[in-house]
Length: 195
Ligand code: FE2
Image 1 (tube, rainbow, N blue to C red):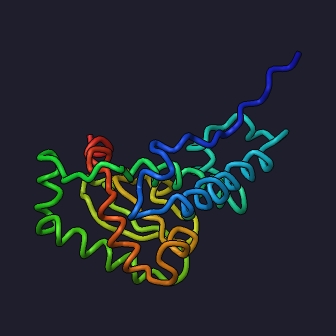
Image 2 (cartoon, protein in one colour; image 1 turned 180 degrees about the horizontal axis):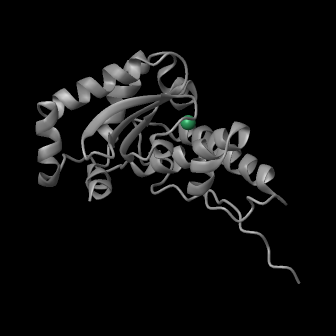
């Protein structure tokens, strides 16, 4: 019997779908995770089935693929990372993030710069806090499925700014979504990504 080819899997959410309310609704997670994220994973598996890429890891696909396979693989990776950036337990950044916060002029300045960049993205995309290959921590945005992982940066925090991330809860108000996002950031995960 042939060994089944490896497949990209939909990782479980690291919290219950109701756990982020009132900042992010169960209905949003039903659609965003249960339909959108799941669809990206299924599309990747359909595209790699019976091809030389069927045994590649998701990270390998993100770094090497192009066209629809890249788009869907990057969206699968970005969403898995995004869920890990959120927590139902309201947190303040730990001491280990002090140097990062200082480099922006404090937590409020970081949040303001990140939110401003996120709101300014035309159309769909992602806002990121990353550590670049030179070791500098900075904010950048990507459009559509694009991801700093592809460029060799270390992602520390992301916010999905596709309309499907906020239209149920905030309609067209991306700024209100960003304010809710800050109530949910898993700063322990950010610090862990920095190590
Ligand atoms: Fe999304």
